[in-house]
Length: 221
Ligand SMILES: [Mg+2]
Image (spheres, rainbow, N blue to C red):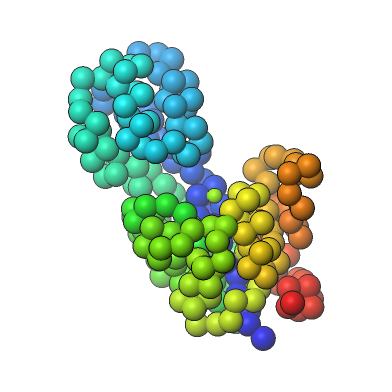
């Protein structure tokens, strides 16, 4: 019986919102931007979904920044990963899984620099397998990236997926045959869009409690 728990990275293991706010405050100070710049930066970010070259094009225009996009991007890729931190409770919870014989993996959509976030937060050694979409050539909700994560962890694709995205993490995980835990981040599940997750939680520690407390039959399909 495989004991596999896979985790999304941004806004699941790591608080992406907090890191982005931290980066933005450095950016505002560095470029001497006026008060109120944060709301423009936040708007243009689109919760991290807007391609970064477009994001900086937009900022240059809206905030009259006289520095080329390429240079802004280079600074961003250098500084932003270092704005991430991880909660002690999150690390302890992941370790609790491993101590109980579980394999744990990271499954994240994004550029290769996702690895820098794991490095900056000392998380690389905490997982058995790490899959970044741009590196493995498949992205959530596709089944391929989940298969690759199980392979990297050395076990069958059977167990749990934990993440904050209803489509990528919950629907994707379910389609790959996994039980699902949704990091709700204070949101209500929109039942009109997708079938609900097996569980909804606020923290990784809660997710791990669910996983360790659930009977095997609930995730073995
Ligand atoms: Mg996420």
